[in-house]
Amino acid sequence: MTFGLSFLDKSPIHEEEGAAAALQRTVALAQKAESHGFKRFWVAEHHNSAKLASSSPEVLIGFLLAQTKRISIGSGGVMLQHYSAYKVAENFNLLASLAPGRVDLGIGKAPGGMPLSTHALQGAYDPSRKPSFDRQIADLDRFIRDEGAVASEEDKLAAYPTPPTPPNRFLLGASPESGRLAASLGWNFVYAGHINGDEAAVSKALAAYRDAGGAYAVLAAAVVVAETDQAADALDVEGRRFRVEIEGGQGVNVGSEKQALEYVRQTGATSYRIEERSPLILRGSPSRVQAQLQHLHRLHGVDEFIVDCPVSEGAHRFKAIEHLAAASRALAA
Image (cartoon, rainbow, N blue to C red; front, side, top):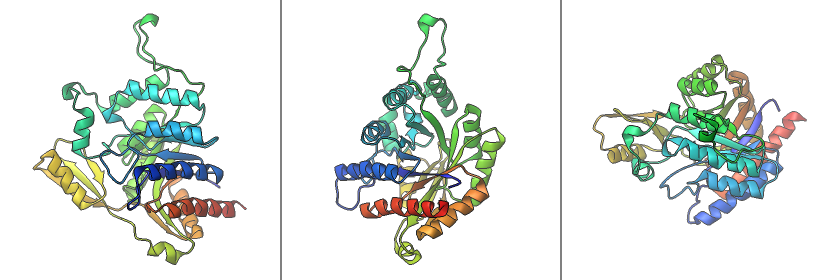
């Protein structure tokens, strides 16, 4: 293979099953991805979402590390705006000490939920003292690198424990600004194609990352794969995303127009804009999807793809890993 292949799991709760079943499947999927040679397995952070069981990726990561042996396990990603950079560094340094060389720290700028959950997460904070995202991620980077600000050795603030190998750092984003920020920190960059798959937007963000000195680019894509093209085409998946821009507030991406309007309602905003976006969805038989990945690799020069499977049904998710791995082996043969 000329590129790495990884898997992103949001622990979707299928139909009437419970969260425990969805999380047990996440564990089994991580083991399946490991046995089929995937590079990494990531879990997401979503709040107040009844159909997604992964609300605390750092907790789930620790369990997944204990249930696997080789594959890298990480966050896709931690929503940094809700937390202390120092505490996130402590969490991931501890994980990296438990499983040296296998922990990925992926950071996102989005809230991972609606204003209601954001208020619950940040309600105890003084908004006037909240640092910018750029400041938060710079602080996080210093703590991970064990370069916390000190007045003297006695006053040194460090995010212990110090792991043998620091967690591998990734910034998730979908803009040239995010690409440049990742490069300035020396981080890997993940373009969120499964949220905004516009070809020009992908190219601009990845070019900005490389022009700023970035070294390792990952493209996230939704993948619907089945035994035949016809079977994949028959699968019903949501293929729309919406961008909400609130005057004076943070822009967010949501999965439906209804969610976009609910986001606006919860903010109480009167001036806003909702824009539909098209996610990057690769669909077809294993060979067809592999050909699409090869095309995107040549077009954008990405080093790795991380696959988001938009079908929540468990058997399909397991088969998706098998199909992708088999296609990759066939290509390498």
